[in-house]
Image (cartoon, rainbow, N blue to C red; front, side, top):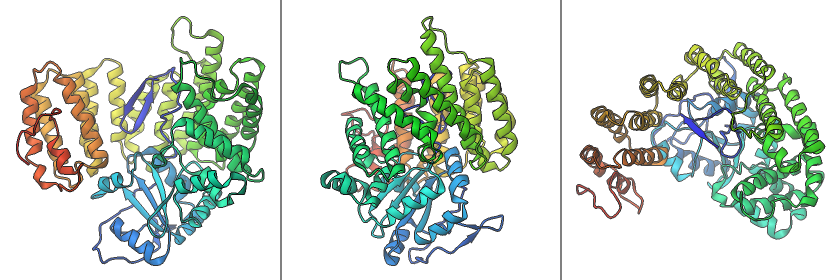
Length: 566
């Protein structure tokens, strides 16, 4: 699968499928999170939104103080990690955080909004093991992580999950161990709900590899009480996604298929049942959106009538989502994703792309995408909602070969979004694909210059530098000057070598090393190394992997000492 990253966005070239490694469209309005004095541990006060309606009373103060307040009040802590530029974050805000019932539910928690651009946010992000935007974590009153929650659930199911989380004092890893040891059929319903609704894509602290998840989710599905229908449906879709991952990991090997052949038909019928139920498909929206073709191939290895039946059920489910007025614009628009993937799969099954030509969408499908994108564009006027919906609209157009129309849409509407720089980098990738290098670099540079926020500035700055190194490797002076500009801005931050900042810096370092593969740019890299190392003493040195150690290791080859004492 060929991915091209554009900011936080994954742009998949037409002809590729969205599956594992997908961007979670799960994935809040920009709330002001200001640092307060450490003695400020007042409870959150109900706030008013600009429109005069009640909004979540996000805790305004240091995160450590929020944990202390939660313990003092005996309340669990609800932590939302988001960013202004992140489309899925605005999707979550629009779908969940503005709902009166959810706002009321937050009164039972200490709600904390941690923006990735907040002071010291990347230090917290690394400490909490946060890898992507958005991330929602529920902690117990004493600060133990209970679970990481998905954000594609209906509001009423979120309520039930929060109830389960509030009643638990154990992290999801401990819950899983207890349920497996004590028996699924005798487990407490709240524990099964916690396991069913945990965001396993983000729950890497649990440390389960795909084969382990495959066995665990199958047991949970088989042994959970039948009356827990929604939870069992989620265990099944987790199982199917794990099977897809196992199959990919073992591709070309002689390993047995992840699902026994004599069980496939029962699972296919259960998948059809989930797709036909509004409640069950709503509880499994990520699976419905992104795993259509992969699941169809998994459960109908011999194609034929069984495959046609499953594809028809999936297409019908997608059509019902698309026409459901109770869902958000982005939910309804995203229902086109499985329809596109299934159309591609059907064509591949007939022609197998034997001639190596890329898949070509029918004119009817292209027109359907155009009409739905036009509808969505007319429906969404709020800049935050448009941030989420714009990425879906542009991706859909590109997926059916309408890249020019995607480009025109971005050019016409990006300045109506809350964070246009997110889409400027996408414009850069379009120009790059077209071979227009100068225009591409201009867009990447503009995205950096337009970006706002401590972490976001380096996110887009490092992206621009990596493209500059790759696309204009002979522009040595420009590379050096712009590197010092962007690195200098980073070095002023106290979390410069933490969390996402450090991950981006590691990627940039790899870019520099590739650029200097022949050794002709060693002098330039030595200057950049010394420029960074001069700042290392400002960072804390505690721990084997401290920020100071990371700083002093920048552009230093293995077994090579730092160029200057730090």
